[in-house]
Image (cartoon, rainbow, N blue to C red):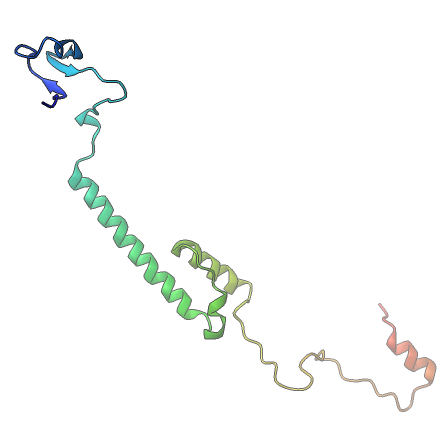
Length: 140
C-alpha cells in the first residue's frame, strides 16, 4: 500500500498511519521533512515557458547567422585567428580586431618595402667628410 500525500479524511486509515498526517486547510497532508509542495500561484504556465524558450532559440539562431556573416568578412587566411567564443562575444572580438587593423593586408612585395618614404636620399658627392658625418646625426 502506498501513502498519498494529501487526503480528505483520515477516517478508515490504519491507526498506525493516522499520526503521520497533519491537518492543513481542511485536508490532511502527510507530514514529511524536506518536501514543500509549491503553490500553483507562483508557477509560470507551461505554454508561456515554451513560448519564451522558442523566442530564445530564434534569437540565438539569428545571432549565429550574424556572427557567421562577420566571419565571412574576415580574410580567408586570418579566419583561424578568430577565437571560439559565444556568438555575441565573437562579433565584438571581430569588430575590435577590425578597428585595430588586424585584418588589413599590407603589400610586402618589393625590395624596399621597409624603407621610409617621402625623403629623397642625400647627395654626398660634393660634401666634406665632416658634413657627411653631420648628416648622420639628428638635428631638431
